[in-house]
Length: 414
Image (cartoon, rainbow, N blue to C red; front, top):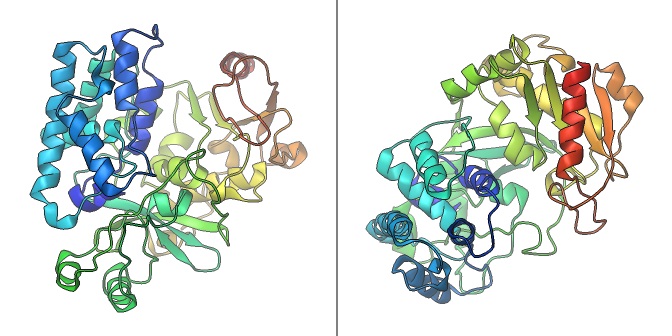
């Protein structure tokens, strides 16, 4: 991501996404909906850099129509942090930050994190301004620059969530790096990892050559077409620092402690390898889940369809990926770093007791195989207004009330 490359720190895109979704529903003309519109706004990926910067300038200076309906007190609070973000970017002008496809919500959260030096404090501020009652705990809390990388089964390595999950073609106004410069960077700094969109290039060589690569863009579903499936399955996801070295960060202690006090754990719909797995590939998470005295049910909410990261996956593949990751990273060792558990590890049922899937899903669900692993299968129907797991092609989706009923039934019968 450009934010990580230029400003450092943890990735906050998934946190922002959850915070936006948990803003209370309000009338279309209410201040809450106006704030939701502003903080969920993304500058178009189709803009030139010049146009994107002009749109950003209108926002940060308070002239954009996006500010309409937002009370002055909250407007100036939000705008103050956007100004702070803008100043931090200007201080690092040599890194050529790109505003194309930028998320206003990400900019606000990043500014709050930089100001408070605390992700939880940034979340508290966001929730206070939006009126959200949600209690969100980041799995990882750090002020250091870390990003994820993927090792594929054919030994290809990819750096960066965007490059793994939803890369797009380089914009026409971006000058590509010279082959020699790119080779030096990959060989010297990333130590074998493929250059991805979360990478932070060194400043000296790029500035001297005058051909320094700008941050790459990404597009979620519906924003770009033609995204190809990965040519090989992902073997594992790992964390790396700004030097391309693998690191083993510790999870947020509050996140670990909370696992001991909750009744239900849900692995929600989303990108398996870039949204779910990074929360699990942390030291001690497996033991916290497996040994929790409170968790009565550990539920995998299966996606409605596969994406670029999970082409050809069955439900069993999802389960095995989660279990393998948890066992591999529970105790860091030489074998764990290679994606192999140092011991036999916990059984499947220690991490997943139920799988909830959509009737008619395109993902294969072998109930006999899952039952043999100790996982109970629960099928839900498609009724009502789509809110989760939508598929553009087949219009498959979960609807909220059916999911609530399925979870109630699991807890009641458990």
